[in-house]
Length: 251
Image 1 (cartoon, rainbow, N blue to C red):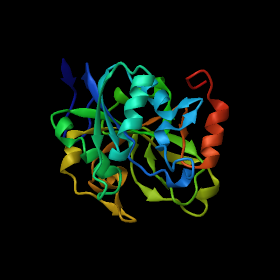
Image 2 (cartoon, rainbow, N blue to C red; image 1 turned 90 degrees about the horizontal axis):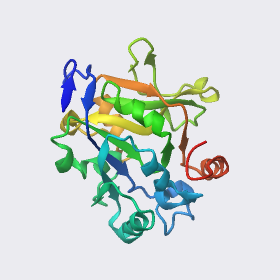
Image 3 (cartoon, one colour; image 1 turned 90 degrees about the vertical axis):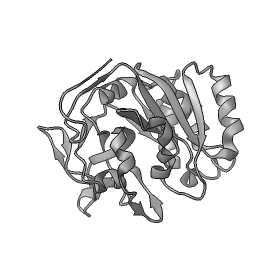
Image 4 (cartoon, helix red, strand yellow; image 1 turned 45 degrees about the horizontal axis):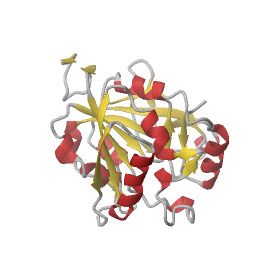
């Protein structure tokens, strides 16, 4: 059962889809958390429970199937995680081509499975979210990014917002003055439409990124402000998450 208001091509529509597929990107190298990630992929690091455990617990109720994108060398570890944590939802494990770097190519791994889906949820395997936030995300106009306000270092991009229409107007580097302030930050939670697979990949530092490709296409992109999420990129992030998480869920 599906209903639409507006046009998929313009992006100005609300999607009421009973079921939705989700992709969790877990094929990164976790270089900034080495040596902890030398033998264990970052999504399986313990923050009380494995990071991936929290991600599965936060999935919206309408998600009925998950595609887990990993490095092939980690397949035994991820299969053991699924068994040990009694994950009930249908999970398909796919391997990213190790010669093709970046989140764009991680997502392309699932292209054949998503090409007929009007919209699908994408989550980074190293971000922990509130289920409430992800429920709001999948009810929004699409394509849509989850945003939060954070102080970021120079490598992270920010954006300008249309507060009335809930649209993202830019995807840009921070100015020197903005680095000291809390700015809109792109989380690893977003909903894309199948048109994404028609976009030409956009590279930065030798890798093709999803946000770079999405905004490079000129598509209208909306946003939802997340109440809370943990971005685990550095040892400091990891330490904060360990202190704040307890009992298998976000406080």
